[in-house]
Image (cartoon, rainbow, N blue to C red; front, side, top):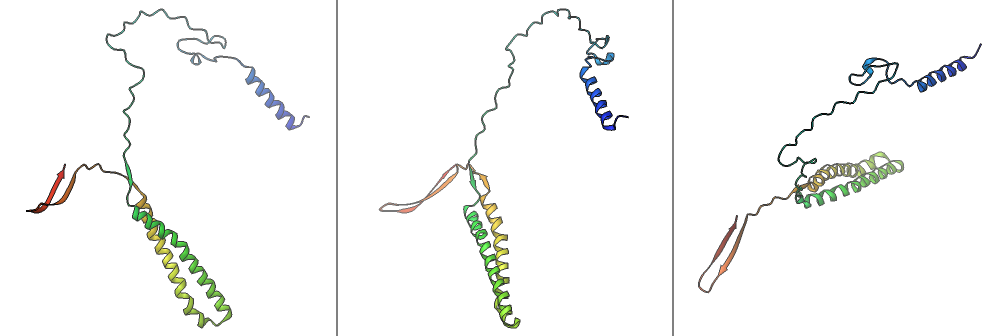
Length: 183
């Protein structure tokens, strides 16, 4: 009796060979294109269509194959919302790790103090520094990140051509202030 593996290998090989060797173009009439009829697994060629009468071209300009290109987009001038806000945010976010290092060093100092001395003498020395530095880090990050994001946001520049200029004037006999408004 052949082994199950050998039977599976032979069965798979027969299935692959049968699909490779079959060349039928159609199995039933619905497999053929248009009005063709399936004949012994082959789709007969369609009869050449009768020559259609020539279509008269419409008068006037010929339509183009491609639509006209879109007009070029004018690039709007952009500027930051506020450079001062962005710089302030950068400084505050940059100081956040410093506050965390201060809290960490104070925590290590508190731990070493508790090893060397009694707990009562170390409580007031380091707790204020640890909690103050942690609170400072949270405030610096919480305020600095929004400042940085909002300040760095790019906004389109308004094209306001309206200006108002105030200029003082003086002559030997009179003086005053002039106002010029350009709309």
